[in-house]
Image (tube, rainbow, N blue to C red; front, side, top):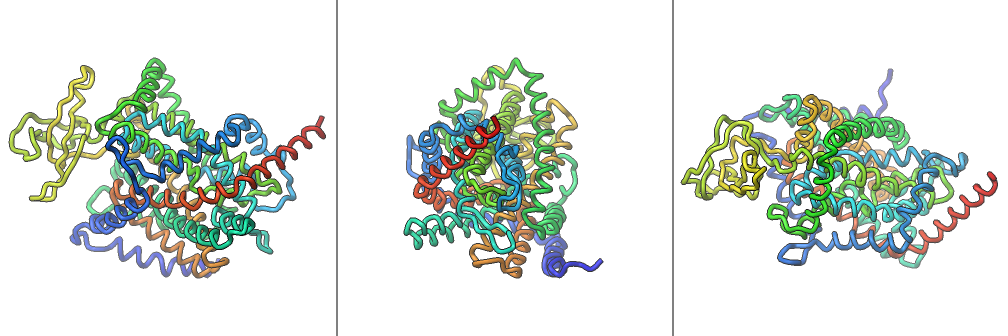
Length: 576
């Protein structure tokens, strides 16, 4: 069978550089460390630019988080709590009750929902919750859920606008997303120049979001879980090989378009989500006597200062950050997938879209958090790998105060590099013996000999306490979650590229896909801290232009909602 010319180009220009990277000499100081070192200043620069902050109670509060959270609350009130009152209508619409089969578009309401969910239900719920609780304590869950509920209204607005201002070419192919309602919607209001600038900025940031949150974070956590669960690719420099394999797999799939993605994800997402939720439910059900205290800890922690989490403000920040990372409400990415739906009523898809934050944040994230809190694994930041590691009284690491042995679990309070040898010194609290009676023992410990428990490995450890073999099952699920998310986000980035080019330019799109696949390798070998920092910055940079568009186009959303409600009323009357 003759190969497609685009596939040949992909193999020629993508596999060769990956091969050269993967076969680099192991003696080159670990290529992984070099890549991570290259990424660190970029991540820090992006983080400081996007998360410009002011002080509240001695803690830095990023302005962008206030804008995102405040807008979600405002829209919820403005639309009279549509996130609660219209859930039934949203479900009926997703099932196709009010669908016109001859309406323009490429995919059904349900396919659009699952395509968008494939980019949100996944590692943001599994690893993201662990990151939030690890940094902000159980209280971060409260703010995640609150933002998820209010974010349902935000998602409704942006997806309604995504369909309203989408672009359909002569072949019926749909292009949509925030860049289109920013440019076309604001032009209708006489703000064409402003809209063009905002749309361009959004498209550029969307490409960054695709490479960061939709790519590097996904492969980073998938790599960690596969390595920790199966013990493969754990040698010096071997993670690069895993990155290469996953990059090739992703590259071969993203040659297709949104129809292919919809077909794959409409099967994978419910299946993956179902397995994860069933196991989480079993763990919660078998520990039902602890659920009350876990919920109490979550609510209490939301308003109680926590030393490790940076106080109440720190807990709030982690909750909002991880909620946005999980459900993408307000980010403007989901309208890209939802724009392809078959409908003549934009608000119909907006209502379907509000089910996303409820599914991935209110349900999946809450269940993950309960498992982490019930098992107590949320406190574990590192595990002793060596037979014995000494504990020191001060960071000078001279006076020995005790030791920890293999298998002991540590709660890390802070860490810093020691100038003399560049190794990390961690001040940790050994809670494995003192947790029950509440004693707080702190000491300095040489980081060498500890295994980090963070992100997805923290969640995996929690599930593994109840089901010994589940970490391996979770590793497969995480890999599938990551894979489907990368496919969906590659499409988001592709649509941004198409917008910036003024149309579909095959060579440019292929170049983007090659870059996307190469970045998979970078994500596989980088540290979680740098990946999260860069991913957060790229995701939240998309919020800025999107929020401007939402406020200016609110009257349009209102009009479309009234239009669809009248359409539903007419159908219901005719069926009586």
